[in-house]
Length: 405
Image (tube, rainbow, N blue to C red; front, side, top):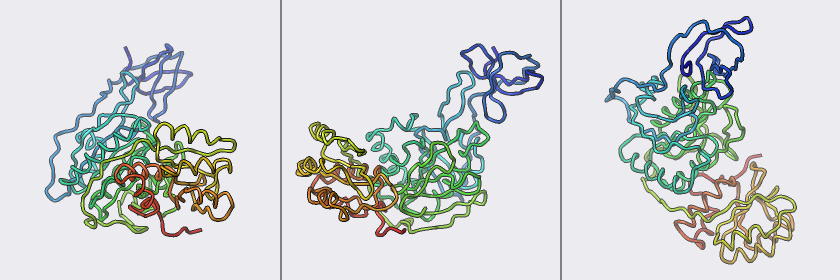
């Protein structure tokens, strides 16, 4: 069996070298040094070079008394993944020893303790996962100078928002991910993690997301957890601050931090945990022709929090008005925009004015996903009526006081 071994072959008059991956077609599949896989139906085996070890077991970590202590909590995702060359599967085993083995430079920044909380795809995150994560971070902040959370990128902005609302933190809490796994030469995992480590010991006291700021390996941006969104499926600079500036820029490899906008500073807030979320809140994207019976259906199932992703300044069809008027009697309905950039203003057109009369609340410049999490937090901790008063108040930097054009 060649699976899991590094081999040299000859095919089509050329020499190829790589690690043999599992194949279900009978062809030879090599992971080349470029990070890409190549399949060969006809080849000549020249030499078996070595067997590749799946697990990297680092030496015992010795901590330095002159360095701050950081807790890394892994929830899975590409950044914590490596290939099992026996099965072809990508697994997550993010121990402290493996982190130091993969990214030894981090040992010059901080002392690291790590735990694997979850090993799941980020789309499998649920509100109960966010609650448990917030509790773990809360406990870690009592002992450590900062916390890093490794997370899959697809829903990282949801999780960052959830932790930002549930947790008042006097220290840095940094979400970090990777668009490309560590077995690829173009991986962004190591650089993102190093920039996050620098942030985790910096003079900031809030929840941030740290990811590549460009397609090159030159700097990362720190985005506020409630103002960030993944805006591309695969680019390394997929994450952008929406309706706000990034909080900081971290240059690489110097790791110099440049603050770009206001921030909660280290020690500014007391450590508090609000670990309740109301799950019966829904985000509905309006499109032409969508009937109001959809929102009636959710209301009949006990949902009392509604975020509508409306068009433009915050609109839906006029035939929604009467339904929304009834829904608003015992529920909270917040209007956001599909445009993402800009601000809701329902006082320009007749439909908007009718929505306000019906009881719909303008979502200011809230991102739809952030508005969803905010409603889950407010209803869970304060109830409907108080949530109606708090939803337009800036709690953790989710609403900017003015919009720049």
